[in-house]
Length: 135
Ligand SMILES: [Zn+2]
Ligand SMILES: [Zn+2]
Ligand SMILES: [Zn+2]
Image 1 (cartoon, rainbow, N blue to C red):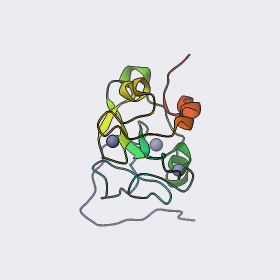
Image 2: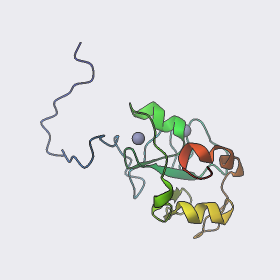
Image 3: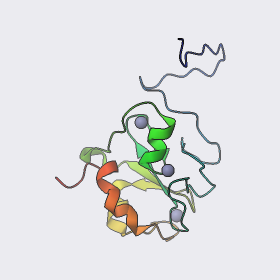
């Protein structure tokens, strides 16, 4: 069984991390992947009008609409944004494409700091899957 071993021979081989980021989507300014992702970062799992935010996973340095997307398109366990990185860009608004920090996201109470669009407040229940926040 050779599994998924593919030798490409292409010239697009950049290795930045030991865990390679998944194939990305050129609709977005950042590496962003998921399942059934639309132009505003909704996905197959969360597709209400306000599911328009994606989060960066430090394990593979790419953005995903949700942790289920991460698990579907990668082959490793997701890691949460560590507390020490809360001031680094790790959230993208699917409405305007602005990236901002976890701290800004948590402070804003489910709105975009740039376009003031609304995010799904239900995501708050899952924050511990994305951010190493409350002890
Ligand atoms: Zn990952
Ligand atoms: Zn998803
Ligand atoms: Zn926005």
